[in-house]
Amino acid sequence: MIFGVFGATLVGVLRVGLTGGIGAGKSTVSKVLADLGAVIVDADLIAREVVEPGTPGLAALVEAFGADILHPDGSLDRPALAERAFGSDESRLRLNSILHPRIGERTAEIVDGAPADGIIVQDIPLLVEGRMGPAFNLVIVVHVDEEERVRRLVELRGMTESDARARIVAQATDDQRRAAADVWLDNSGTVEEIESQVRSLFTDRLVPFERNLRNRTVVTVPPTLRAADPEWATQGERLVERLRAVCGERTIRVDHVGSTAVPGLDARDLIDVQITVPDLAAADGLNEPLAAAGFPPLADVTRDQPKPAYGVGGEADPALWDKRTHGGADPARPVRIDLRVDGWPGQRFALLLRDWLRADAQARAEFLELKRGAAAKAAVDAGDGNPAVVYSDLLAPWFDLGYRRAWAWAESSGWSPER
Image (cartoon, rainbow, N blue to C red):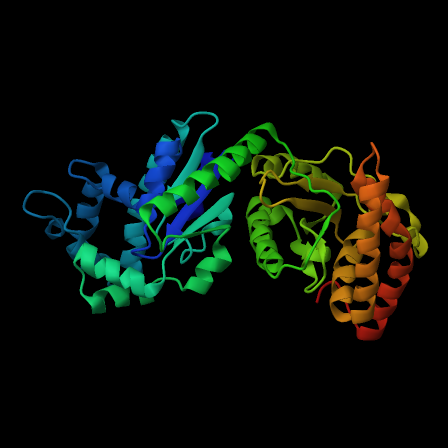
């Protein structure tokens, strides 16, 4: 369905999904983005365009559902079509088989006509309901509370209050939209206020994001700790789903790991994700798909992440700690992605460390104290060097001991990476 609706040509350009509940004011946001230079792909508009009088789409609908789905002037009678098309699963599938390919083709035409540095914004009312978020680099949700939306629908669109509330209930909840939103735009205020928000978003995030994506530039963050943020978990979930969509069957699993995956633990504002692959050849095969999706490779990361010197048997073999590493192009959401081979010690330890720190309050407190000290020292002692390398070197001795302790906890608790 994703390719049918979005078109297969979207990979490699900045893809933004725009959504919001009925009456939230998506059209206002879309207009401002268009004025700023974004290429707007309006799903509702395209769905109407492909079934206008004289189009192959309308002819196909008439052939499938009969001529009585037309008004006397030859245009589509949408209520009549809905009555026919939504009466059974079979008829609904027939409708989708007619509309989705044509919508996808038209979407691809619009995208192909965009400039090389274009920012593609797809206005999709049911993006959350259709779980389409992973298809985009970024999802923008326009929000207004329910009572204000009801008021607008009644006063501005002429709906009855019962109809307005029924339509709102039939759509995603605010919590579901929040979980899907990379950007949450509050449109409860004046037109000037929402326009200001959109202009700032375009200038401060979308433009640099597109530039980083095109140039394959990775966003970095200093080793400065931030107070634990509950939003890290939700951000990690969205990244995991996007990476699953990019990697498909070429990966075994994708997990949010690292300090931001441990509730209550202060950390660098950097989401760590591990992609588990069957072998390093599979990791290398994902290099281009990840880069095109906004996750460029990092050339030299040999000292970026501490790894235990301690190993048991074959785990002491440095080759078994090998990996491939990518970053992120989104200036507002730095990310580090490690691709590791299934069952290799580094892959298992990333999962174990996360779960051990979640379960062991004492280990978590010790690690936090060390991280704070290392961050403070790195800020002072780095000189002309890389503070991240200094920070990593200061953490390394703890990881040597922590490796033993974590596996001891795994044995006593019955932990396994498959759980």
